[in-house]
Image (cartoon, rainbow, N blue to C red):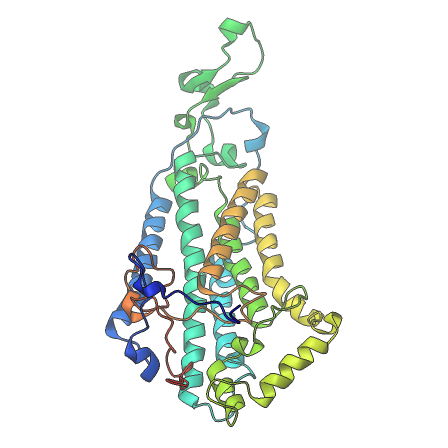
Length: 409
């Protein structure tokens, strides 16, 4: 009996398809990942798109809203008009959800990025490229969250035309001629009801004698709350951003993959560790780290971050709750208006953060890298990543990931 089993040469069979080998450049040289005019233009266009969305949202915020019929005896819209708001739009709200988050993002990116994982000898310009990229993605994500919340909220406000809790005080209804404005509800002639005029009846906004049209129109923009959506979009995004950059999360055991991939410039760690160990082999430092991880107790592989960092991360979130709550005791919104507005801001902030940043528990605080210049504007069906070239090869990137690749055994 033969000691080995003969293998069939499948390449000679009809219909056999052999996977193509990567093109020669993959094995011989690094692909140029420099910032081309097309790639830069694609990100400039991203900002233009956001500006257009903000402009449309601003227009939706100034057009006359629908005015839902109401009852002049409805106690839920009979609160007094608060002249001095707790959080006025200007300057308090603009500073709290606009200027402050942008300043914090800039300080974090310029001071704390790329962190202490940068190997010695890394060029200074490479470090600044990373700082500026993290700053760009941080601000771009923030802008996406705010623009999305702004557009959705303003569009819904004018579409629904829901009365605010202080509508009656804004409206100053003409009660002496209420019969002229009744458009629905129970009729006293039909139900034999008696009592105050307007009981069980709905009137149109034409009953209002308010001469300030902007004040009156704003009285029909209760749902959803713009303060709540903007505060959530801005400050929850800021909390997520800070949690990512300061590694504030519930302790967890990281995946068994190479931890070096989470550093600022992984290939530079790789080159230093693999010197003298073969072009594609593990160096002493890598072998030691892998061994230590295998023999370390699971309880010693993670720990809770300091509470002062948790406090810093939570402060923006608490600020968003305060801003939202102020609209309740200022009689500007009903409860559901605030909850739904906050939900809008939460969704846009979380989406924008994950759109430009790695998950907090997996990404070590980094943003996703730039698009490939081959796919700066379009990827097409069948392509799984905008970071790869048009053939979907994962090349050894730019100088951050640059390393020699063994071409032959």
